[in-house]
Image 1 (cartoon, rainbow, N blue to C red):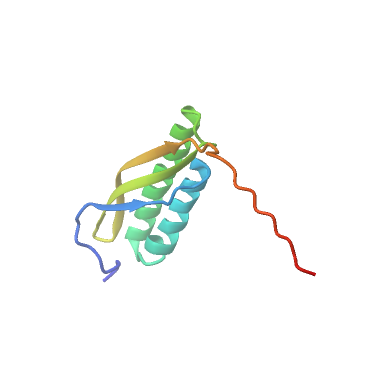
Image 2 (tube, rainbow, N blue to C red):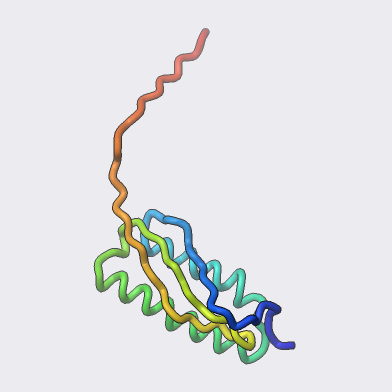
Length: 113
């Protein structure tokens, strides 16, 4: 076979963890794609999957820049299919968060000498 084992064809979901910037979340998604999928896909499906990933990454970067949220905290949720070894993204959501300090706790360390 020229593709990885999980070819159920069912819609799958991958969520990045919350990151300090949306750019960072997109980078985490990129690392996940290359480590978890691209490295295991073989043959023609590998190039098709890489092309699909490249288009998705470009759309994520463009949309986050257009909306001015690249530097905001966020995470990406990706919905995709893996059919016949081909990674096919369906939809991605960028969740944006605002990180505000809620308070401050001071801790003083005093050595006993």
